[in-house]
Length: 426
Image 1 (cartoon, rainbow, N blue to C red):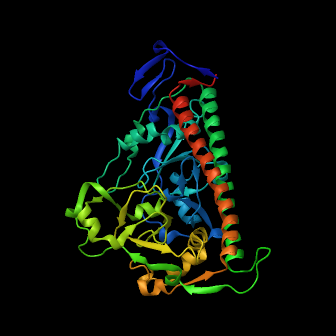
Image 2 (image 1 turned 90 degrees about the vertical axis):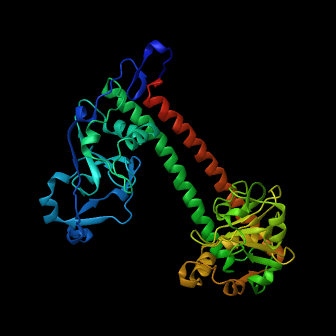
Image 3 (image 1 turned 30 degrees about the vertical axis):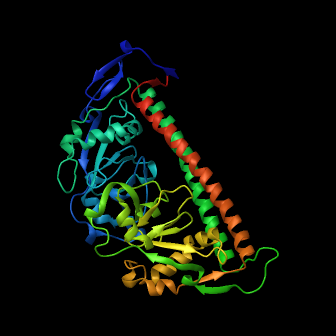
């Protein structure tokens, strides 16, 4: 590996600053074929898994990878009639409409499949490594340049003719292209293994919650039946409040700086610092019953529903908006950490969503229903013991997520340095 420096070793091109010995060919120069996947409706040609040919669509493509959610199959007759869109190993697939420009390479296992809504690029094998091109097209620089050739207003689209003229920075040898692709692939595999571990840890936590919250497993030293109370009865007086509706918070109520207006985004992202709106002292006093204090919970009430976040000690004073619920628990009755874990448990989330009006929780189940939702109340010592176990599991996941974030930053730096030739693998 060599770190390249010095202006004389670089040149400025249409695709950016690259080493002197790199070229900027168009994709037309590098391909033996570029064509659209099948264009039109194929739904009447769908077949069952065992009787058909795999039919890959735009939503099955991920960055340098695939997913098989909602995968479809087409009849063999349809496939034979549309061999132009039959895939070979090494073909590049680029999303044409929707997540425009997202690109991946067809592996050996998917050779012979058919496809829809994708641009198929087949390369001159002696000139170019398809994986290298895929990494470039998926890079921030590549995606930004692809957006520059999009057509359409409401629905963005890539035309094959425009993509053929698209230039890429290309190292001079196939060996260097392959080395760059391999290095980025190794980094991706490391991140993917970490993601799988995080998913596994989260599933283990959900299983632990199922055991502990149903009483199927009791911690040593605890026994006896759990009390159950309506949710409103584990909150302080006026501790279960939905944000102000109607004309309480109109556009003219907002000021450049003052008391924060906490929104659904604060609950969803579990972040008290995100803020777009403020109200002055007079409006704050008028809406004092919607005031948030450290230790209060906020819950999202529409759209992305049921997300919950506890307001930290250092949060700035403010009020909730109409998309939020404020919950102030009675800490003599319920441990806040136990409340949080139970509220985020999948079974409880399903319960409150199933009880919603119209199934969308737009009115948060109707407050009367929500207030009467039963909530388990073990002895406070057992609540705290359960919370400690789940807190430790969360801490483990958080540490893995921080590690994954670090890998992401390293991968981003690698991508830039390798795809611009700042670092050479020679």
